[in-house]
Length: 389
Image (cartoon, rainbow, N blue to C red; front, top):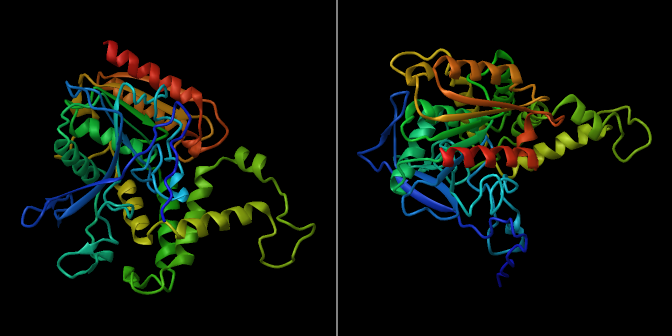
């Protein structure tokens, strides 16, 4: 018998939430992707918090990072195991940075994922089997187009803000370029206008770890043994980029794992080794290897600085009314502050209204996911100012 989880007594909790689904682009009206490929039907998973105002002008779109999902806040009813709060629960809820007593907050799982939205693990209607590598390559722009269809379905034609970190920040910027008339304000956090060679290199090593696994079988592993080792190694590589030297020194140092001396072998002697192995094995249980390939490649393709015609860039929306708050972190070496400052300069050259804040934190790139009242106050104050103006 299922046992209901009691409502969280925390007055700032977003409370119970339900994952919802919307399916569109049914054949022959498939969505045309940037590559020219056609895809459909497409199902998008999403969750919402708060209430949409009568004027429908209080919508906030939250965009997630590459391995995130629509479960950004609150918790599901049902078994106690479902009570885990969303990944940005510290930011979304009554009285928080994204105040659900003021705003109608939406988070949609991205195209290419494996968390409810159509991706390579989804069934290809033409074959009756998972797409695998038959799934067409998509871009950050394609992700935004699916989100636009969802907002149309929800009857929303104006966003009070769109906010997200990392790859979510790329989606924020793409929204501003594609639909500037819809976006009153934008908050790209811990992100960049385009990947550096270093970021692309880490993604490529992660992809090669997956594709080098003998169980990958060119992506056709869904009814067989999955490429668990390759996926785990890919996650370990990625996790290193999310932390900082100081965070790893403080958390692990050179401490040994449950032993007083070296094994003089290849066991996990150090705590940091054991931690990375744990993160890798945990990731294998919840994420699809092919989704990692597609999403990281989409992030590598993203480039607002040098876009090929006829794509729009920041310079093409000169003087748009959108207000920007760009946020970076001092210890983020994946998307360092100098890249955030380059974004700010580009926005200013386009005569756009932009504010910038660098938050001091020693946690690395993942700092934006760690509960921090400074980010909540910064975002809440910025959005209040947008509302007043």
